[in-house]
Image 1 (spheres, helix red, strand yellow):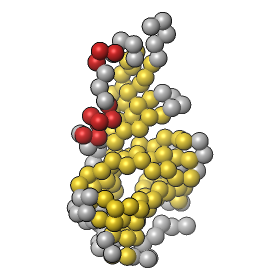
Image 2: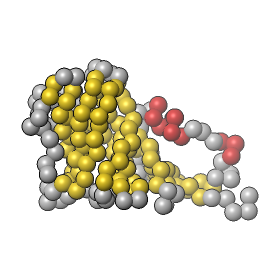
Image 3: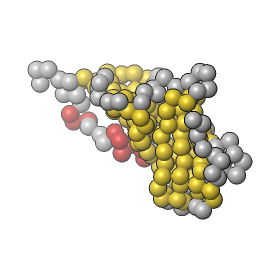
Image 4: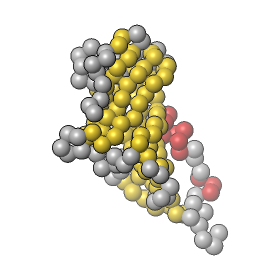
Length: 162
């Protein structure tokens, strides 16, 4: 190859190694499969040609005591998709469930800058997700999880702030 493309791989974004794609032909691995099998989240940033793999604690929970043991979220990776922000991550639930929940992103003043919504049926266990939210909330300061629906349990007051 006269001009091999360069891909940057971030692992828990501390280890950064550059690989020339042409050199690794005989060592190709399905990185998405490997990362997700190990419980990590993975995302690709097309602008910077970076593959980001992150594995961490699932430490984002709903502060409501009735909801907090039902869903845990973590290992978040945010990338831009045009006018939207793509959020990749991992969540865990203790049993099969129909879920309606919002993951809300806040700036340093506690103001909402964006959110993504979970709204589907899931089997018990750990799951990877990719969700799109409107706007740019890449530089968020904190997140909150608001579970509004979990297998028939409905909390209409448990919604993201406006």
